[in-house]
Image (cartoon, rainbow, N blue to C red):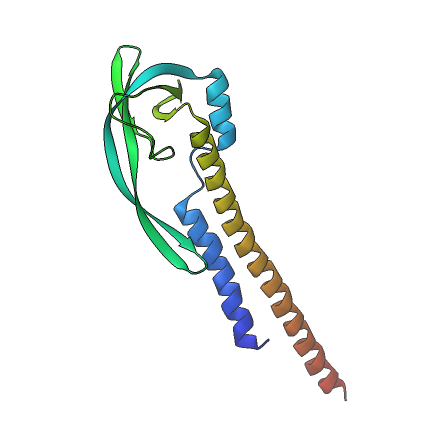
Length: 164
């Protein structure tokens, strides 16, 4: 592998880590969702409207865009009426459907529908984030080792020439 290619791969690895961090770790994780499901607040909710959204999925052979229909739900948190759109469980709701909402009392603005589909989506977000970080870290570490070994060999050769 050429010297320039090593540096390019090193920079790509660093960029992959940086971009993954820039996008941010998922704010909600499957583990956090399980805890909120077990210990958090819950309330009945009603689907008040359907939000249309374009979703692009990337695959090995290109990408495809499709439209999903996500529910906006309204529920009561004590005396306050709150609503949100659930983007992790779409395409099966109609206006007027009843469901249950769960949330952490310390973060009442961060609520989710109490469904397994939401949990599965949160777990998938975690996996994607981890793969990006680990892939970038692998590139940075392996390229750094190769570059350092190259420098070490070059220094030894120069020192060997001076002794002659």
